[in-house]
Length: 259
Length: 106
Length: 158
Image (cartoon, rainbow over all chains, first blue to last red; front, side, top):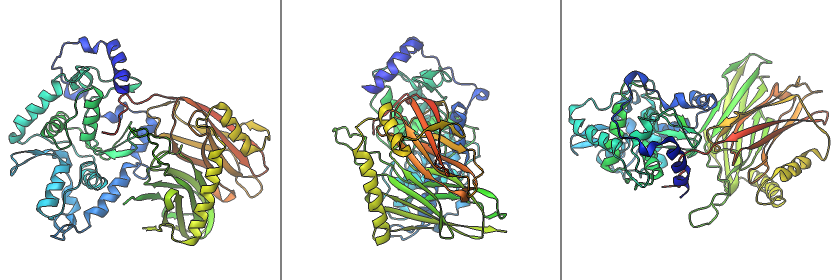
């Protein structure tokens, strides 16, 4: 298919398929946000709140935050002060005691909807869920990522790391092959970033829409010709958790703009 | 749902040239995309944008499918008097949105 | 605050119909894909065959674009923007998109500065042409060559 043809050629040229899999994690001081790989014109779009299309979803989210919902007829604002959301996204995915496993921010919002508001959860990638997630995550903008410090998360981070390192799909590639071992090289004209999820949900120019980290992960997995996990699958949450803890200390940028 | 972002300076001196930035939520479906089945996704775009300053049109644009989703349009005008800017977007399928912004001109 | 009128207001419906029929008329004259020839024809439709000179107008667009879906660009025209000497309109044309027109922007002396910014889609590496029409009826153009690299993982909707 198109994606395979796009990737396979340049990858063979890079000799990626032949490299042994090394756990060569990026040294903390060498970590760079995807922002730094972008052209100045695209960076300018992210930097201007009045021109950043992601802000349209943040505005939608602000309206939804105040809207009463469910049989409980409560809005998010009825229980939560927006200011209290500061720092929340920076430490997600977080451990959910009742479920005994980590949940991401989207799942947390839906859990609140069903448990507290007695409302139907929003579909993954729905405009409403993206808007609310963007609104909450934007409150953490500028704050350092803190995800994964809870000791209860350790086994899940380990699983996420395993997923990051495992080769998969028809192209037999692991995330690490590009994002640990070959960042800053180019693949079919685009820069390979280090894969730090500093700005999610983010406005991707390719999508012409705001989208979640899970959407991006599914697209990448699809791109290496592997079967993507369903939205909300524990594997995707574990990968998210690993990626966020790999990015610990880097500032949140939501809503980011990326090509 | 579908917000709009308008950036107009709140204050300006008479005669100042000010920049107005607008960003409207819209998919701007080109009408050239195909579904996996081969069907064409019908066109759904904003076709026209205009701005009035205290009732007088100061800027107008015709938009085509080549304009990106969530159209961003910025332009300039002279701040002549205190008042209101009215923005209007019109498009396919009866799309019609308006927004306003105020300015104090001293 | 936003007001949503679902085209029920007669005035806006009339305006909508007038605009959409104009757009349809433009579309029906074009073949399915723009080429340098159809872009030239679209430009001729604007200028009526008048001479188009290079100069006065500047087209700012990144030479290498990260994603053809959203290409930020800016057009500016040197002009005193007085009642006697101003820019009436700025027109964008694209060479290899399915349609040759990008956008038309109508200014006037009140603009103060003849500069417009927007974001366009480019289907392929191609030329963009911006043409300014001045109050004296003259036309001025600027051209830019843009290289568009597709994103590495151009995905289907999944």
